[in-house]
Image (cartoon, rainbow, N blue to C red; front, side, top):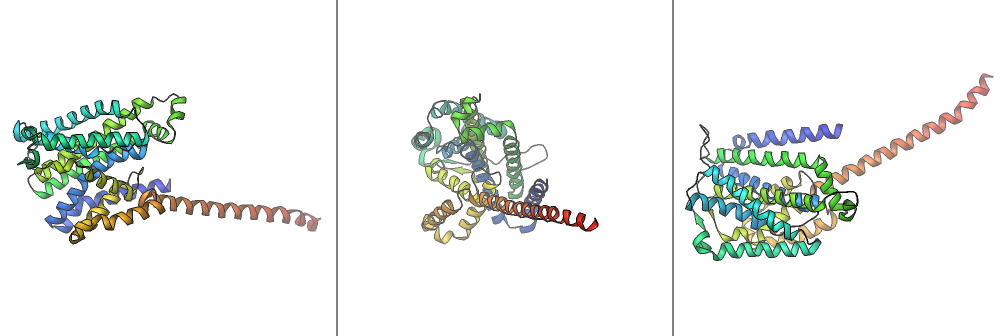
Length: 344
């Protein structure tokens, strides 16, 4: 009960800090970086749902991110649709593609699934790069509009876009929380732990895996659409495998299979990268060894390591309390008969 209260307090403080952040800094550059971090977090939550809770690592995540971004760009720039209609369609179209790709991909397991999705991701990149008449090819898409007004609410300023992205991030976190703390979440974890055992107890593994895969692509599409409307320019490089590896790095550093891992990992890596821009060409020389050491000593990431540390502390306290109770019981059992003899 106390742990739950502490977690609620931590989440409440984090939300309050994110709400007042633009007023604390009043620096458009910091607001820009934080907004971009929120967008990446949404994509990382999609990767975390599939890899962290179901146990299937999709390496096509950047491809679905790019489909969401390019669908929004094409529908607004070329088809000149209303922004919010294009925004919804970008998520729907990506989910539909994710459904058909998932039907085939999820028939494979473990490293075969990772290799298959890697190939799918690369095919998506090639389609975007080579289909010049639709996607603009290497030139990309320019002039993607910012989110259109909703009544009196405008999203033309950096602060308003910050709060819009924050709204979607909080919505994604709420959805993830509800999934993880439900029967569906326990079903996903059962599949991750042992798919064969899950089948024997009557769990429809294919149905659950496909649902998680489609939801993962939805988060990727949402992240991509927000990215396109925020940056206003996209190129084929957003579909490249390096984006998937960046998202995976955020997840591994923060803590795979944890609710707050995507937040911690993304904030940490993005802000460190911003402060080490002069070492951009040697970024992987820095992050590579650090990530290797982290996986060796903290395989569940920073958040996972912190949770494990707290559990060990709790176990030590409980063992000490049990030993004290046993000692007190032993002393009272020895002292009881002596008192009776003296009284007699």
